[in-house]
Each structure stands twice: as structure tokens, then as C-alpha cells.
Image (cartoon, rainbow, N blue to C red; front, side, top):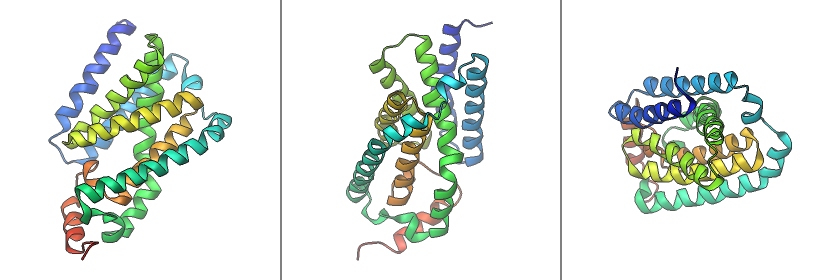
Length: 225
């Protein structure tokens, strides 16, 4: 059996290597299966340690207290995303809502549960559990959690994706720790992600069936004359 410290190194190796192995595939089923498996592994680990109550608490009082900050940061993030789109890809502004509003509705309904929730289990709750076990102090823990969260997005093939998710990961981890509420971090992550897909940075965080058609539709009907 692995000691706890050795197991952490094995887990880190898998987290570093797996995104590189998956970087060449556009198969969303493979990607979603991977995050579900990771989340399941993390849930089992928390359950076996008797840590689910400590690390997956909704903590409604903390959630309510954190809500104004979550909403403010989400609004700032949306403005930053819009600015990036205008600078980097102005014709992609509101690409999905313009080109495929039905798809945007599907994303709005399911993204928070299918994508965000398993990520929060893995990269906030389980990461905090492991970092606490290693007695890592708050600032390095925040940076380590954000670095791992950012790195896994290299599977989309862009360092911009990694940089943006590293910054977002700092915010999510601080929200999680400050509120002691997995719900607060989940909501903030969900709002940032919906802004990414609605405003036009979706191509940095999704590639798969329909991507080329969506891109063509946006370019065929540019927002600007």
C-alpha cells in the first residue's frame, strides 16, 4: 500500500500526464469520462477518510455571506472576457448565442452540473483535503490548487486556456476556503464558465463535434459590419 505522501505524488503524476495524453483528442466523451472518473476517485477518497462533511459542505450561511463577492467577481470576469474577445477575436463576440441559441440554452441548463460540479469536487474539495494533509499553508495551497486546475486545461492546446484557468482557480479556491462552502465555489465557477461560452471564448475551452460548424456560422454572420 502507498503511504499518503507517495499517493499524492502518484496523483500529481496522473494529473500532469493525463491532459498531455488527451490533448490530441477532440472526443468529448473521453474528456467527460475522465473528469467523472477523477471526481468519483476523489469522492471515494474523501469518503474513506471520513472527510466528506468537512470538504463538501454546502454551508448555507457561508454561501450567503460569500454571494455578494461571488457576483461582483463574476461581473468583473465577464467584462474581462468581453475585453479579451474584442481584442483577440472581435467577430466571436456572443458567438454561440448568435449562431446557435439552442446550444447556448443547453449549456446554460447543464454546464454547471455536468462539467463544473465534478471539477469542484476534484480541484477544490479534494485538493484542499490533500493540501491540508500535507500541512501546506494558505497561500502556497491556493497557488498549487490553481496551478493544477490551470494545467489540466492544456488538453485544449492553448496556454491562454491554462493562464486564464490558473487565475480563475485562485478565485475559486479563495472563495471555497473563505466561505467553507463548496456551493459558493461551484456557483462562481459556473458563472465564469457561462460567461466564457456566452461571450465568445468558448473555443479556448471546448473542441469537439460541431466546433467547425459553429465557427463557420459565427464568421458568416459577424457582429461587426
